[in-house]
Image 1 (cartoon, rainbow, N blue to C red):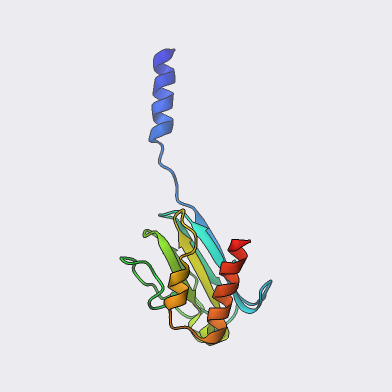
Image 2 (cartoon, rainbow, N blue to C red):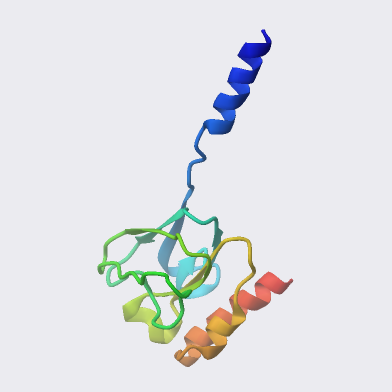
Length: 143
């Protein structure tokens, strides 16, 4: 009986943990207003995936140059195509919709246990509305 209990315990410990898939919709209108990712801020574990799902034409998801952790690989989803990205490097990633970036269609993906790295936003070259949306996300996490 004791051997069976030990064997069961070892089996449970050896069972791999499965990464989660988080879904983010690209919307013409959402809770935060027009042209948004929803949710706009996603906290994920290292190894998790995020699937960005367009819901209208002319939408995509891609990393914002300069807004990803050192060693992370940028990605660029196709227009009107869902894209699934595995996040293996901890840190804060800025995400944009290429066509609606100037009017603030942005999101943050935070990988790992850390809070949003505000310097990533502060140092990025961003259109006014995109910066404003990022600041709204950061302020919401502080509450």
